[in-house]
Length: 311
Image (cartoon, rainbow, N blue to C red; front, top):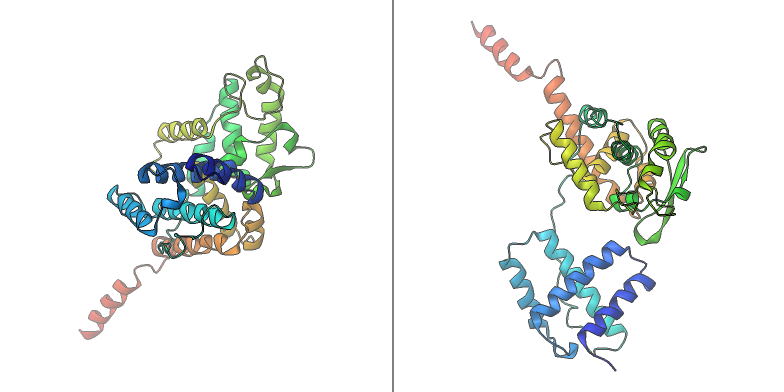
């Protein structure tokens, strides 16, 4: 049996794709983690790896001052890799079995206010094909709560404007149907009718959002255009595609949308993932009470009244 580490990493990637049905982005992340792991250990035969080697690698990661979330992901990749090797008889012992996952504190996602969203969306122009494409992409993302990978991977056939919905494939290759808002529909119609053909240079394809070379726009380019636009309107928050998705979910919750509907729209397999937004909503409600309630200074007033009563 071939125990060469490079061969086994390739087999692991096939397993993640075919048997686990993971997205290409997740597979790429796991692949990079395992390559970093094997490069550090400098072993060619997987059977030579011991539990002590894994501990040594994890200590190395801590020395690099990586974020706990990044280290946790690498541990997940290592444990899944060794489990795959063990179940497929490449190794006789799963040396990662007793490696524990660190408990991570769940940080609340940061969201934009509706006023900030309006300022962002209103700041786009429609002067050029690129301008209209950018405006359409941002409006569509906020309208649907798509992941950035889902947004850039859309094809024309996924959009059903007359019926007001789109189809996308999310994590685990699961398909879901998402309604599109009226403003996003109008922008999509305008983009498809007057802008996309100007970007579709020498290519006959079904890609929805094209770059200047007529190819699929990348996640990095979309992230960059968001940052550029945020700077134009002096948005102090660190804007990212995922922050738009967080804002979509939080604003729906604030408008009394059932959390199970939000779970379906976001493509979360587990309701607990969606419930993080209930905590965000509670925090925002506390902020509203603190800042805008007419009796926000109630304690000060009571102290004054008490002093007056003593006179």
